[in-house]
Image (cartoon, rainbow, N blue to C red; front, top):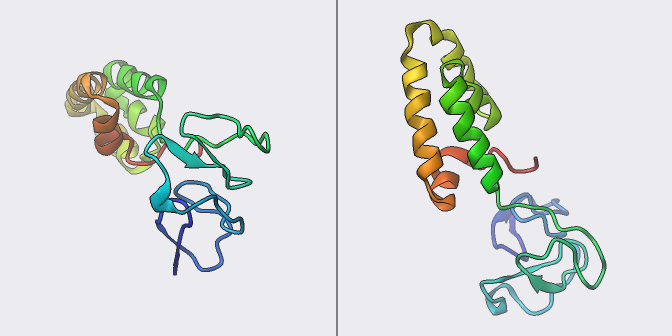
Amino acid sequence: MKYCINCGEQIADDAEVCTNCGVNQTISLEGSYDERAENEKYCVECGTLIAKQAEICPDCGVRQPSVQGSTDSDKIAAGVLALLLGGLGAHKFYQGNMKLGVLYLCFFWTGIPAVLGLVEGILMLIADDTEYEEKYADGSLLGR
């Protein structure tokens, strides 16, 4: 196993792209991981140091993938689905958690998933982005 040249996560030895941050592992980066400021990231194509919020690299023009997981609209959509269709597990399917979605569907007739969905919907909507990512999104929205 080797480590990503950008984020330091462990990746496969033959990986050309980091599955965590999306940076091409065959490029050379400006500086090192430790020299990067908190609001900076490396371009996934050319390795240039760019602003973390940049959608397009100013040097090579390549669109940067969003690897932050969800956005506010994802959180709101999941919360509303949990409130309205939580008994059927719609919010679990939306978040990519198929096992729990099917479990909610199997027991929807008991009313328990509806109560859980109502509670989860409220908790999702009042959670800040970091808390939502840790508790509910669980990385399942990456790559959407």
